[in-house]
Image (cartoon, rainbow, N blue to C red; front, side):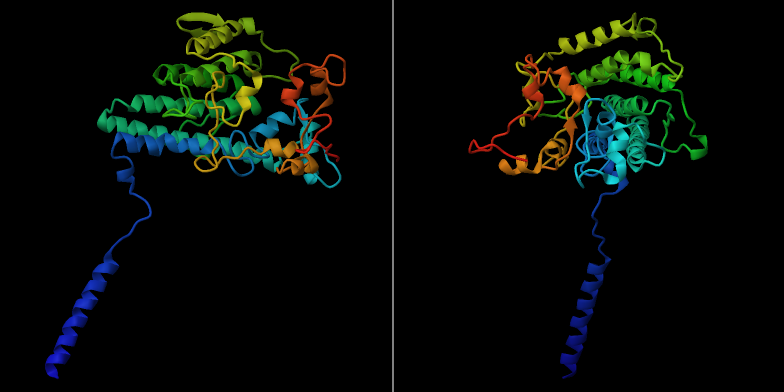
Length: 381
């Protein structure tokens, strides 16, 4: 009996020892910071690739396109291009959409504040990535790092482009550790000049590959994307270099100059130069206008920068199409509809709608007139 008791104690001892060892293990759901930056591939994934998670979006005010109450809506429903009318109880939302169209927004707008915060959030994350890349380069002198840094600089410049376009005078925050007390408002021209400088310096180090086609550079900031942004900046230089837009006058594009390829060009010459650079990289107009907007448009020869969208791999949202359909139109095709956005009268007149000379592109851009269901019957609303 004593032997059996002794054996039991020994077995229990082994059991507790085994359990003790098990409990001492440290399972992890994430890797350490040292492991995240221990080689060039890991550095790219954790400093550059991670930023692209924020280009698209799936919640309000997040992403450059695809979601509500963000960059797209603030740039669209404030113009003569489109309107989101209130129909019955649909789309009043406290007068938000009416306020955009009537230009009656203010500092208390949640959507405008959220969009501002989104843009600066991505800029701060870009600053952190640049600081990490600079640190890694000093430690390793890795030959890939300058290209990674150029991509992040171009990426950050794109977000400053949206800020200077939408808000004008904004703070230039180029460090992730800048104290709030040191954050100062810059003039619109200062921000514009920084964006141009960053893109011009980054472009030679960026890949010339297509960003809109499947592959290693799908959805990334490549050289043609930088050229595209520079062309847009030059095209709007009269506005972006104007620090006093309430004065009733603005600079002349012929008197706004850029340094392009060792030449001093005015704004209009700069637009042509960068568009020629894009063409030289193989871009051209698509055979038909609508090809650029097809569901599978990865082979487009015209699209320059696209946001990858795939229900399995890139779950970014594109909500604008079904927002415009009436409920009955959508139901007739087994789709979703929200009885929302519509073209303005001014936009329709541009295409000659309801005249004897309707532009042939009208039907490619708008859902209008008599709508038939899949059986050929008229859809009534």
